[in-house]
Amino acid sequence: MTGVTRAVSSDRRRFLTAGAAVVGAAASAQLWLPSTARAAGKALPDGVFSLGVASGDPLPDGVVLWTRLAPDPLHGGGMPDQAVPVEWEIAADEKFSTGVRRGVAQARPEYGHSVHVDVRGLWPGRAYWYRFRAGGQISRVGRTRTAPAPRSSGGSLRLALASCQNWQQGYFTAYADMLAQDPDVVLFVGDYIYESTPSATALRKHEGSGEPYTLTQYRNRYAQYRTDPHLQKMHAGAPWVVTFDDHEVDNDFAGEIPQDPDKQTHDAFVARLTAAYQAYYEHMPVRAAAIPNGPHIRMYRRLEFGRLARLNVLDTRQYRSDQATSQEGARNPALTMLGAAQKRWLLDGLHDSPARWNLVASQIMMAETDLLVGAGKQWFYDAWDGYQAERNQFLEEFRSVRNPVVLTGDRHLTMVSDLKADFADPKSAVVGAEFVGTSISSNGDQDQAAFRKEWDPRRADNPHWKLVDAHRGYHLFDIRRDRVDAQVRTVDTVLKPTAKAGTLARLRVDAGKPGVRVV
Image 1 (cartoon, rainbow, N blue to C red):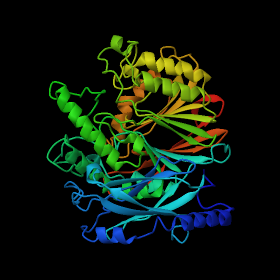
Image 2: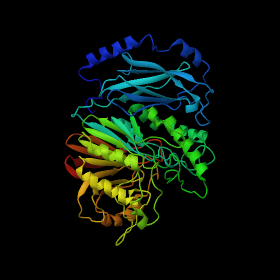
Image 3: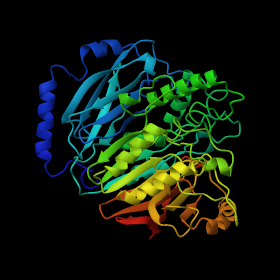
Image 4: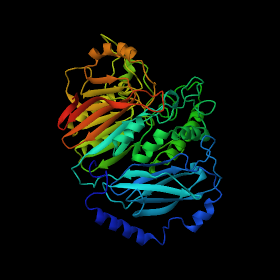
């Protein structure tokens, strides 16, 4: 998409003429500022667009546009208990001189007055601008991009990988640099919010008086995060593809099993899941397929970027077995991270893919992390190391998958690895590459000397690691047919509202050559 979506391409005149024709044909049914919307919106409180705008899940002909009306965001939203018409407009230019689509959506109280507009009929590989109006108020302008045409095989895709943004542990300064790098799409792989209680000593204190359990409490926590100015600007700057990990609900939960089942009954946790998934949907730019059904939400899905890349977005929380508690348990073939249906879906999508690159968005690290220095093994059981039989099956399948690359979060570290067919055998074949992105703010500004003292001795027991680092930031990928060029972008601090950013390391994955190398 780079070079295609930065601006309207050389066939601009034909594209703009087509867009104008669409508006003209729909003008009688889709008017900007219809009288009914103006009348209904006059009584709304000021500041209804306090949470900004967003777009997501780009298709060749469409994208989801999002906003949520919340004049009092930290206290339930502050909206009247009634549906409110919200006008939306998408255009081919920032000044909206050439409109492409317009319409009216209903912001309903049962969905927190959120709006999800699934716009279709757009051109592939194009930049668009959009905005909303309600009650005489207008939102900020957002910019989005559609995916390339289905059969296109050239060009490039710039993708930013982010995860783990703890409000209390730092400012989201990395998003300022991410916006400057102008990604085509942002992939967020989990821990958008943290459910932890407010801390009196935190840099930025969580709202409320404890962990969220109810829908209103989760709405307030999401709303607080959505007020971050860096996050708002990045949401408005590019489409996002999102999935959740554990902290959007409860630390280290598995399916319908909480972290502390002795303190949360099954019924109570099911109610908590229902509230958490509802609030997640309300605050993310996702399609109606993700509307929750009680304590269930469908988040695993597939997005295509022409014939260049296929992105398989996983859900590694909702269908997993409870975590193992021993090395023997971690090798239990009955344990599953994905569940049977998602597992079949992923394997089918990898083997049937027409794409040059097959990307897997996995919230949890797939490569081995042996924590024990010297003989023996010690693993994090919440990661894929705790589900080794299923992990090893996927790694074996990777042998016959074209250019698999796993994109991960969770660890609060940069951990870039070769994926091995058998981590018990250091000489086994390399079958893929994995990039574990560092956190946006979680863990704050770490003591780098202490980190190196703890982690450097483990390198010899993990020869598949290519880079391990503890700075805050994100990863930036330029995906082309012959290679993936990756940058580890880091900031010098998250303890202040602004920061200096730079490239900590550059890495590359070459097409047809599994694994990753530092360049």
